[in-house]
Image (tube, rainbow, N blue to C red):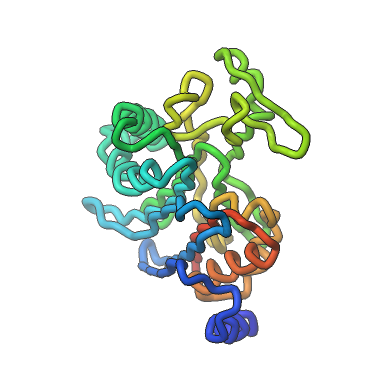
Length: 285
């Protein structure tokens, strides 16, 4: 056990950095000669709103394939949309006929169809929405990451952090929003917002803003090789207060991914992050 893991256990036992509403867990598998393990941790933010973050972290057999399914769903204006995504998005992706032949295209189609279904069910799911970052690990070798919004995926190879997702910020997509008839506000003391309301340029749901808001994901593929050490998925509650390389460096010596995920959430809390914080760490050994 490393020094950081011992310190983490002491802090957890003493109750430091912990939350009564925390959710945590872990899992592992062996595929293609690789031992792959994951851990996750969620803590509720300091606002008066109920928890709006949901995640998926599991390994699943599909035919002759072993899949790792990982996702963070960060809701706004309610928890119904991210909860719906947790239950349905991966199912919709895997049901796409082109999933095995053209995974990137299948994911884009599934994101679109899922968003259309959420909009159809707006009376039931409410007016809110959700960001999403998903990572599908196929047979321990091929990783496909997709996202809408500002939840983020960061991979580490040979100690170097690389961001795989795209932060869909309104300021970066101002022209696209304006071309659709919307606008981006930039008031002093506030972040840029679509139509003065939403702080991300892409999301699921948000029926009232959908004319000016995209749900098309950014999708990238990455090969998992012997140089790959770990993957972090987290909501913006972490990334608002921590840089990519800083996050990787802080957990590189923590062998247990569940302890690593807890360490990151506690570090974000210590830095006064007030948002819900969700984190998944996948370790490739």
